[in-house]
Amino acid sequence: MAGTESEPTGARDASLPARAKIAVTAGRVAAAVSRKAGRGSGSVIGGKVALKLDPDLLATLADHLDVVLVSATNGKTTTTRLIAEALRAAGPVVSNALGANMPAGITSALAGGTDARFGVIEVDEKYLATVARDTRPKAIALLNLSRDQLDRAAETRMMAEKWREGLQDTEAVVIANADDPLVTWAASSCKKVVWVAAGQAWKEDAWSCPACGGVMQRPGDDWFCQDCGFRRPNPHWALQGTHVIDPQRGAWPIQLQLPGRANLANATTSAAVAAVFGVAPQVALERMQSVAAVAGRYDVVQYQGRDIRLLLAKNPAGWLETFSLIDGPPAPVILSVNALDADGTDTSWLWDVDYERLAGHPVFVMGQRKLDLAVRLEVAGLQFHVVDSLEQAVRMAPPGRIEAIANYTAFQQLRKVVAG
Image 1 (cartoon, one colour):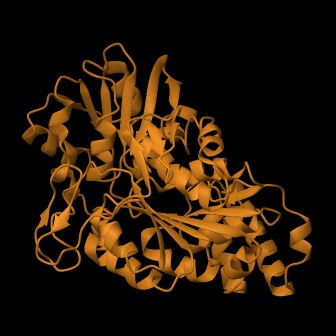
Image 2 (image 1 turned 180 degrees about the vertical axis):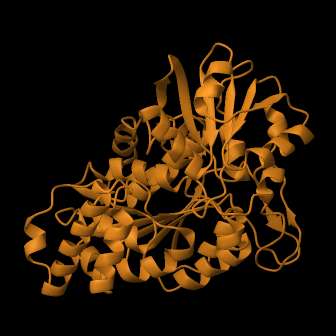
C-alpha cells in the first residue's frame, strides 16, 4: 500500500497469520487500483479494505515494532518526519510519511514496512487513544492543541480530556509540551512523562484552566491557575534560541533546512523522543539536517518562470507561525482557502487570524472560499486582488519570490498545479 516511508517488505510478510496476510494483499491491490484510477496514493482505501478483512490487523502489524506516536493540532507531519530521520540512526523505520493519520492510513503504512524495527506514526488527535491501544507504543509525543476543524473535532478542552482519559493507563513514555496548558493537563494523568519546553506562540485557546475552568495567569513563558494551583511543570528538555538543552544541561545546536521557530520546537521534541530509543541528541539533530521539505511543505518550486514557496496553514495557530517566516514586504503573497471535508467546513476561524500582519504585501486571494477570505481581508484594511487561478495570481504579482499559503486541500491543489 502507498503512503509509507520504510524499508522493503518481504521476509516478515511470510510470517504473518493467514488472515493478516490475505488482508495485507487485498489492501495493496485496492491501493494499486486507486492509484491507477488517479484517485490519490491509495493509502486510505487500501487500509480500509485490509481492516475490513482483519479488524485486528493494525495490532498485528505493530507487534514487532518499537512504536512512537505523534499527535497535535499543528506540526504532526513535520515532527513525525524528523523523528523518523533521527531513529534511522538506530535501525530501519516505517512511517506514514504522507500524513494519512487515521487508522486506515496507519494500517496501510505499517503494511508497507514489515521488515522495519521502528514505527514512527502520525496520529489524528481524535484517534490517538484508539491507535495507542492497538499499537502499544514505547513513546507518545504530544505537541500542542488549538482550535481546528471545529465541525469535526469539537473544542480543545474536550480533545484534551479525551487524551487525558484515553492515555492514563499507557505504559508509553509521554513526551509532552510543558508550555501548552491543554497538553500538560492531558499528559499529567500518564505514568511516565518527559516535559519539553517547546514554546507556544498561539495562546488564545489556553486562557482558562483545563483542570478547573479558572482564569489562567500567563506571565512571560510561565503559566499557572490561581484557583486550583495547576501550573507549568519544570521541563526536562528545552529549546533555547537555536539549541536543544538536554536533561544534563548539555546544549546541542539545531541546524535545520526547515524554516521558522516552530520547526526548532519540533526538532527539540524530536530529540527528546529519539533519546527514549537510545539515540543521542547530537546524532539525532545531525540526521534532521537532511530534511528540506515535508510532503511539499516549504518546497520552493518554479511555475511560469517564478519561484513560489509552498506553505501550509490550516488554523489560526498555524497561520500565526507561517506569517513569522515569510519574506518581508513587498514580497507577494498568495492566500488560498477551501472548506472541503478534509479542511473542515466551518471557516469562522478566518476571523481569528491576524491578517493585519500582511500589511505592505501585495496579496492575491483564491480558493473555494476566496470571498469569505476577501471579506476578512477587507475588514483588516488590506489591499488585495481576488483571482481565479494560480496562473492569474502569478501573472499579476510584482517581482520577487512568491509566498503561497494555503489550507489543506487548497495546498494539495497548488501542488498539483505547479507539478503539472
